[in-house]
Length: 261
Image (tube, rainbow, N blue to C red):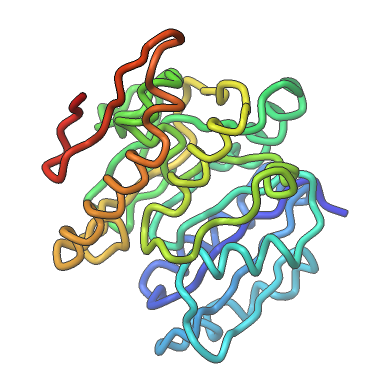
C-alpha cells in the first residue's frame, strides 16, 4: 500500500497534461504515491497522453461514461483508494518535485494535524513549471500564509494543493458534490466545526497555481453562482468557527459578501 494517493480529475486537459505528467514522475517520493487519474468523460483524447505513463504500476487511469462533477470524481477516487493520506492535483497546475515528499513528511511528523498546505506561486502562463523558478525568482504568491482558524471564514487557506488524512472522511463524510468549485472549502470548514485542530502551514513554495480563465474557480460566466455558494457555506459555519467564546451575537454574511451582526 502506498503512503499517499494523489487524485486528479481529467476534463478538457490535453493542453496541460504533458507537463503535468512530467511533474508526476519527477516527484522525489514518486514511489510512495498512488497517482489516480479519473477521466470525467472528457471530449478530448487525454488517454493518448496518459497511456505511455501507465507502464508505472502506481499510476492508475479510469474513464467514466459521464461527468458527475469534480467533487463526485474526488469522492470516487478516495473511496477506491486505500492510502493513509490523500492529496489532490489539478491538471492545469504544476508541482515542484518535493511536493509529495514534503506533504507526507509533514503529516508523519505532526500526528496532531490532519491537513497540511504550503505556498503556491500564481501564474498566468499554463506552461510555467518549477524549472522556471529558483529561490531568487520574484513571483506572486497566492494569498494564504500561516493558518488562522477564524480567518478560514474569509480565506480558504488550504487552497488547491493540500494533503490530508484519509481518516477525515471516516469522521466527517465525503465532499458535497452539489458544489461546483467550493466543495473542498465546505469540507475543511466542516472538519474544523467538528473539532479538528488547526491545519499545518509549510512556509515554502511547492506548487504553481495557474490562474486559468476557464477554470472551475475562475470562470467569469459562473461567478454569480460561485459567490452565492461561497456565501451559503460561510453562513453555515460562521457562528461556530468565527465567534469568540462567550459571544452571543449572531453573525452572517450578506448577499454582497459583507459580514454583519
